[in-house]
Amino acid sequence: MIELTKEEKKLLERSIRIVKDFPKAGIVFRDITTLLNDKKMLSFLLDHLCKRYENNNYDFVAGIESRGFIFASMLCARLKLPFVPIRKPKKLPYDTFYEEYDLEYGKDRIEIHKDAFLEKKGSKVLLVDDLIATGGTAIAAYKLINKTGANCLEACFLINLKDLGGEKRLKEFTSVYSVLEF
Image (tube, rainbow, N blue to C red; front, side):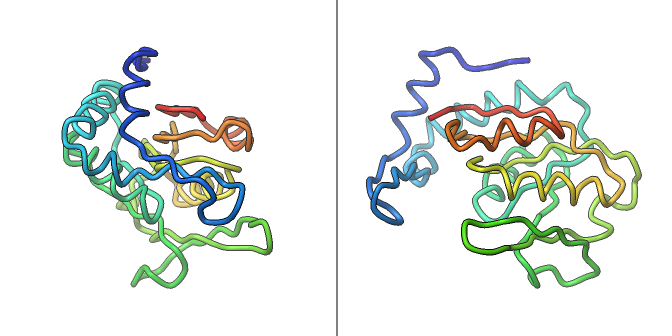
């Protein structure tokens, strides 16, 4: 599978702003808005992802609310594939499946339309989000996709916060690709 070189990763990393102590003290936040505002680097990222996925015969791309929508929908437009949103509770207007996952202080849940993949059992799905940290949301999204009868063949993230272990947890379920690791 296609991956970026070290030099290409450095270029892409430089387009992401680092904000210290956000949203609370001790956190180093990777702000992707600067990447989204850099048309050259955004195009470079999308070109890379298209090369990686163009010959994989995916049927759908699913994105996790909210920043995952950005990358997933742009990738869908380039690959000419349909987009499926995975949303926060009570945001989808039709019949849904939901999956709960643990947060630091409690639980949350995400939802998907029951007919998100047009009831095509066995549809091949690429899951996309901007970041993987502990993996709770991504694992819940994987389970939702499979609950519909589709198959999540890979999960793709712009950023992997490697020390938090989410990638390792998600790899128990599906293949994982992270463009950048911090």
